[in-house]
Image (cartoon, rainbow, N blue to C red):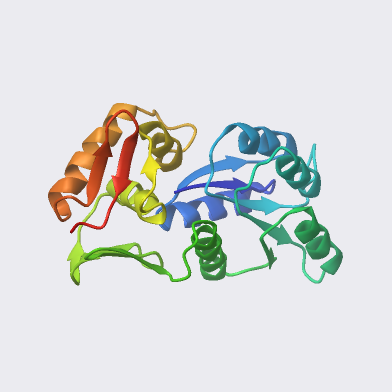
Length: 220
């Protein structure tokens, strides 16, 4: 899963990016409104953390432009303490949730997980497909209750497929959602990760849909 962090204060931006990466996500960072708008308009993100007080283009304008262009990714806005006007303006502009500064990273990550779950139609923090369970709170995967050891990229691939279980996901779509923008992307590595996952997961869980991509299916 891939997250865009938009924050102009360098120290906070780095803290946010590091915390979100440690939670298992691929992260891109924008430090001003113009860059944020361009990245959100041209790249695929599973969610955005958006500060409203940005240089060059304010966060409300960025969000309005995204929504007007049909960009539907969940957006969590960061607002100043006790500034209820920002909260209202953000929600009206199309934000899905808000968090007031200063905040605890644990709360931000919990709200982020909830936004991503809701976007995929999931109510629980635990995603299940057949005997496989993925706990989004702890980045923990189990098969029939037995813990599974995965690399960070294997986990990202499986997490994206679990969030979109039953849907056909193209290789290109996986590449867009497991790598940050500045990562040396190679679509062939997705096949490697899929191959490794198949060795660790029950047979038939990950289907190949010829010419289209992969689908996570409940094995019979």
